[in-house]
Amino acid sequence: MNTFQYQVVSIDGDYANLKRIDIESDEIKLVARALLPPEITEGTKLLYEMMQYEIME
Image 1: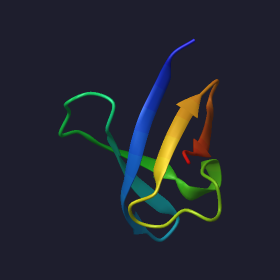
Image 2: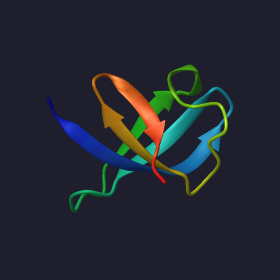
Image 3: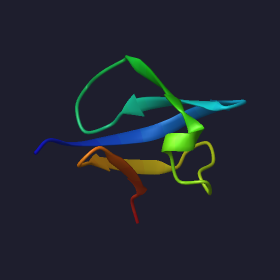
Image 4: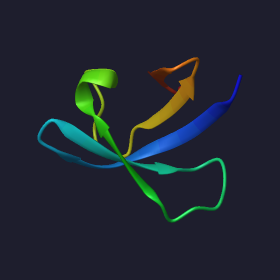
């Protein structure tokens, strides 16, 4: 199963813009906030694994 690391770049209403941080990439991924942990803020690092996002410590 693939695992990806993201950082919350910005939050825009019901959506968050995520940037991949485990590889070099300038792409921004738009994700519905309903799919993300409710306590995220800009700068939060997330781990995506098994179709779920969780906050990285």
